[in-house]
Image 1: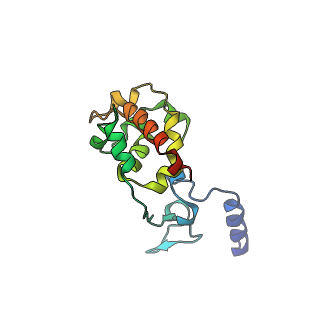
Image 2: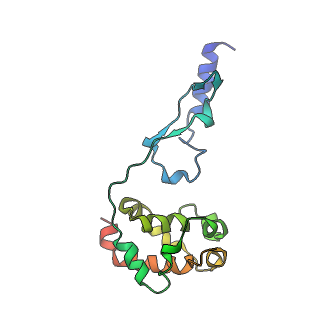
Image 3: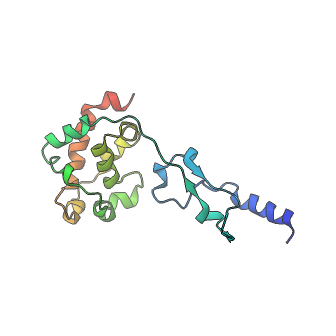
Length: 165
């Protein structure tokens, strides 16, 4: 196959494909941070394609733990601080499997860290929780993610004007 044919095939195969399609939890990575070199060689080994995908670090500068403190004060939200991000809640959640935008582990993380910009982007997902309780049964730290989702929905409602601006 000539060099020109290789280039044409490469161009055709990459046209219309989602940037960073193999990245786990892709919806949390902005396109501007994904680098997919067409040709990447390392130590004589071709690393092009999926294995050559690079994600630039994310810089978050807006932190506010007020929502976290509000969640902690609410009934069933008091154990949010115990979460160590194991992901068991998300693994057993039927809603997370049906709706990729709902991820209890990530929602708890962004609230605990006070990532204001991320909370603004993803806060509406908390209302997808069905309240089935599978997450709370699977949690090894006794966080009660179901209760935390309820507490977060109350806190998000109280901060609605800030989250929707």
